[in-house]
Amino acid sequence: MAQRPYIVGNWKMNGTRAMLSEARAIDRAAQRHMKVEVAVAPPFTLIHAVHREAEQIGVGAQDCHPGEDGAHTGDISASMLADAGAKFVILGHSERRTAHGESNDLVKSKAQAALEAGMRVIMCCGEDEKTRNSGKAEKFVLDQLRASLPEMDNAEERLTVAYEPIWAIGTGNTATVEDIEAMHKAIRGLLVELFGEEQGAEVRILYGGSVKPDNAREILSAEEVGGALVGGASLTADSFMGIALAA
Ligand code: PEP
Image 1: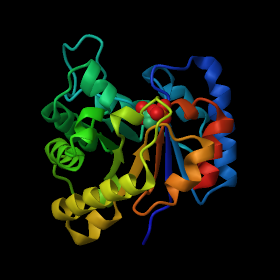
Image 2 (image 1 turned 180 degrees about the vertical axis):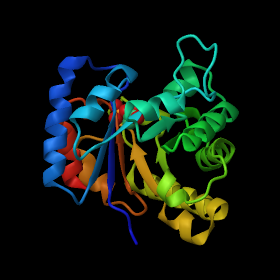
Image 3 (image 1 turned 90 degrees about the horizontal axis):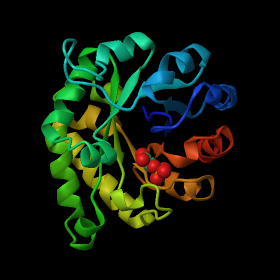
């Protein structure tokens, strides 16, 4: 059975308690549009507060540590996030791969920890501009995903993949519908190979990279696009729900 479109807001390092009013507005709007699954990933400091406010939307985290507990100053484990109310973790985002040097191996161990803590994983992948221009984007993305994804049962419930070309994130540039469809089809092929025909076919593949209310309809109606991972445009309820309504 086809899953509902999934629209996820990645607030990145934005938001203080003043932003809870946006979360409430998103939640109210989501209650009126149940055909779309809506979720936000606020910074760690707001996860519990958003979770307490949210009746309809899912709440997740933007990262986790691969360990369970111990001497890791400044880190947060997956079970702590689950305890705070997070239902999913975004992992392998290009900003963490680049700014924090996260390798595929590390991303995979974080994903394992998130799954063990009972959370879902949104696994990001995507090529940089140089790789796209060299014609090697598809191979790069499939290799990155293959190396970042742990084994799991029930992948259709526990895993979402987000294809986010790095050159499209926060730049106002989006990939063409043809390029998005081609990459999503290639990712679908890998998911079927890794998780089997039934589960692999049901894992949602989101597109991310400068999705806005005015381009959302075209992107979200592309083949194999199961929703969107949204950065900048998720910071106000108006623009974020404008995207959700286009789904
Ligand atoms: C992101 O970083 O996940 C993202 C998609 O950002 P933006 O929508 O701002 O391009």
